[in-house]
Image 1: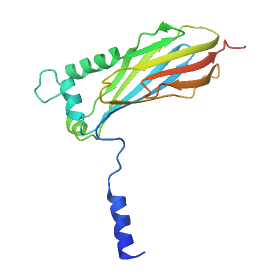
Image 2 (image 1 turned 90 degrees about the horizontal axis):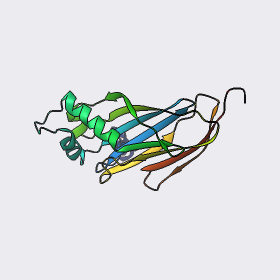
Image 3 (image 1 turned 45 degrees about the vertical axis):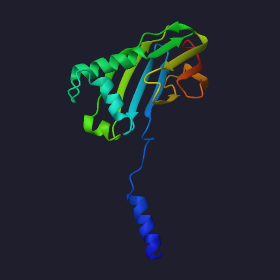
Image 4 (image 1 turned 90 degrees about the vertical axis):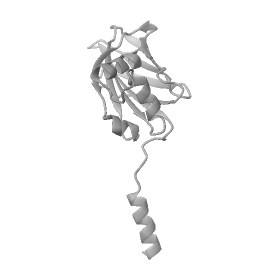
Length: 180
């Protein structure tokens, strides 16, 4: 390898990898369906250029520090901006876990906020439709959503359908009673 080639390779290896664009609020959802419920895992990653805007929406008292109460209110705000339905019926989401990053890491665009939700899924056999919508911070958000392979063999995914921006998603699936 020439000196110039070695230098170029060293620079490429030393450069930090960018997980997402700096001017967007990446919101990646994974959804797992089981016979009795749905699990939603949401990873929110503000880019460095929008991090101050996101933090300002969390820091209600404007003191530059994020309290547990402010984080809890933010999780509630995110929850209000989400909707989940099964076969046209709303499924109330319950927050089951929340992991918040240090404010400095969020400002640098190097950290994510993780929120886990569950919802009860009414029993039914045959073809089903699950829909999910995310309207959180739609002016700066970039959405991603995907189903997780079901662990229970009685649940079978038939197809996923997304809006172009992935803020709206539909899962076609079937459920079968044991022994059918």
